[in-house]
Every structure is written in structure tokens, then in C-alpha cells.
Image (cartoon, rainbow, N blue to C red; front, side):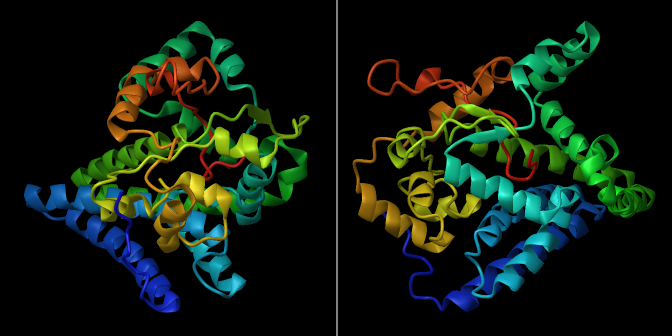
Length: 331
């Protein structure tokens, strides 16, 4: 297997500045192209907007691990900034960091409630609506998770100090969307489509990295060791043959290597993966099969757990995948 040696010879500080600038620039350029009257520029705008949104999510992941800048305050500053790009800003940044670091420490996927129970106990009309939207690849459950973050200060007395903060965020973000619609309804609809694509792409990547048991926040946590962590962690590359394509997810597909050393920056993960697992990585799952699984189990994963992967017997075809485990929606 080839390793991506891109960036190995770069100055880390320069590389960090370049990737931060690149993500911000392509996102803004994408929106500008959505406003163009030519449909060919609109298509390019959708691609760049989705690309910018996806990279912003995984850049946040690197920033909360303090893997971009040497100065922690710079990581926090840009981490908070990029949450405003992809809409994760309703969760306090410290909550996001704590949620994700707990995922590494306790080897569990934390969720705010029993997802299967929640979906099954919805009233028949709401459950039918949820199923219909999810069947059509509208990630309704992910938007429910985001809405819970918005209204959390009004439902949880311990978070009431965040009420004016969230009202202010809703006011300014709603104003921007209204302004975009006022300028161009086409751009508004294309941005909405781009955001839905972004949520699906991030959800796809998150779905197949672990077969951890769900852990409800605030409940008891079963103690797990590093052996359990690696056995229930899986890597999925955009392309093993062309490793540079893995940069589309900022090398997030090198997930076993990331869990081996969460302080390893994104540009060193291919090198670390190769040194740890070589060409015989057992937990490397084929992208083509996972795309099929994402489609096949898009409804059943709402009403069950993450499933297991018996690579020796059943194969990866039975991997249901998880839901509601995005680092952008901390419980």
C-alpha cells in the first residue's frame, strides 16, 4: 500500500496555516459561485461548498486535539471559528472537546438518549415522517440532534446561562440565511442542498469507524481497554491506491492510527498507519462495501445498535453502522 508522503517535508506551522486558509477560502468561493447566474458555476459552487463544509468538520477534529497549532489558544480560536461555518456553534466548544476526548478515553460512543427507543416511541405519524425522510437520504435524525443543542438551554436548567447565547446565534444565522434567500432563492436552495450533502458525507464517515456500545451520557460506563478499542475500531480509505484522495476527509479514514495516538496530526497518520499495520491491516474496510451498507441499512440503523463486524465469517456486508455519533453534536 502506498503512503501519502505529502506534507512530510513541510514546515508544520506553514502547513497548518495553509490548510486553515484553504478551508475558509473554498467555502467562501463556493458560496460566491452559488450566487452566479451560470448553472455551470453553480455546480462548481455546490462541490466547493460541500468540500469546504466537510473539511471544516475534520479540521475542527484536529483543532480540538490541538494537532494544528502549537499554541492551544490558537487551536481553540480557529476551532470555534469553524463551528460557525458548519453550524456546530450551538454546542459550547468545551463541551465538544470533552465529549470527543471522552470517546477516546472510555472507548465508547456517547449519545444523549437511547436512540432505538426514541425512534420506536415516536408517534406513528412522526415515526413515518422520520422514516420517509431518512429513506430519501434527508438526514432528519441528525437535524433532530442539532435542534436538541439549540434548545438545550431552555430544557436543561443547568444550561440556562446559554439561553441568550443561543438566541443570538439563531438570530445571526437565520439573518444570514434570509439574506441569502433575499439575494437569490436559487443560491438559498443550492446551499440547503449542499448542507444536506455535507451532513450525509460526515454521517457516512462516522457510521463505520466503530462497533462500540452506545453509552448514554450520565450513565454507567463499562471499562474497556486498548485491545477492545483497536478490535472495535475500523479504518476506511477513500482510496488505498491513490492515498492523496484521503485528504478529502483530512486523513480521517486512518482511524485505527488516530486511536493509537490521538495527538498524531492528520498529515502524519498515513506514516503512522504504515508503521503500525503495514499492508496487512485487518480492520481496513473497503469503501465500496460501506457505501452499499450505508444505503442498505439507512433505516434499520435508526432502530438498532451499531452492529458487529465478523470479518472472518460474515464479512463486512453485515455492518449496520452507527448513527448520532458525530463530534459536531455532543450529547
